Image 1: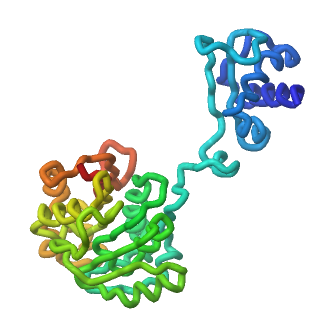
Image 2 (image 1 turned 180 degrees about the horizontal axis):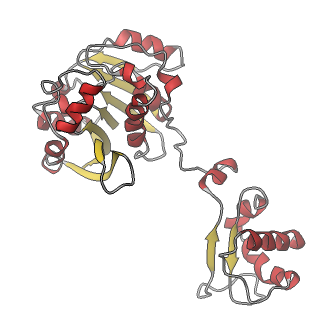
Image 3 (image 1 turned 90 degrees about the horizontal axis):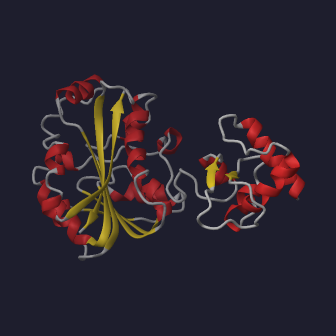
Length: 314
């Protein structure tokens, strides 16, 4: 086993030319120095998979002690990618419970209500932007299961499908969407959400009831958005999370919506992200994380299309 571990060390030094080498280059001597650190309990899983996926490579001062003291200058470099960790049973960057929205997943969802944009989710390029604005928000959530989850503005049910694996009990409320086709569609996939028609200004739920509330592309339609934030705050348990997403409201977005056939949106997009964000503190929310959909990404000059915040009830 020691010989195999020494071979693994030499293999990584050849594959990673930028890594610092030990002053001793004889593999048989290097084995005596490195093997005890590689085979430490917290690194055994990675050393067992080093040949295929990557490993923890430890570089330390020359010593034959099987376990260095805490003051030892032990440097550990991880050369295993996040994808490698998922292959050997550890959680990866992708959510364990949450799934990403893809084009084939939303293909069977019919439009449900006059404000439901599900048909745009199915288009080649525009559909990617519509789906990615949801996926960016889902990636903000912690990788765990929640007890009760509420979606405000479920529409055709696409986000319900993404939330279902992470919820013990899934709820949804929408002002004009019919819950019947969404329930039927979700039932064919093995999920049974509790959906109803209702008003976010008067949420028909007990106080301190939900662990997570999610709302995408709803608050830009609300003139009395502080009242809606207060209602969401009321139904959340202490420390509960609120995932809120909404598009930018400006002339550029107005032109973009016209280009894809949305028509005049000035009468429906009445509140800006800045206005809603300024009301977080006064309605009892702390900002945990934020993410944005920018086009083109990673460039100095870009258009911000969508804003997403993960909030926590104070």
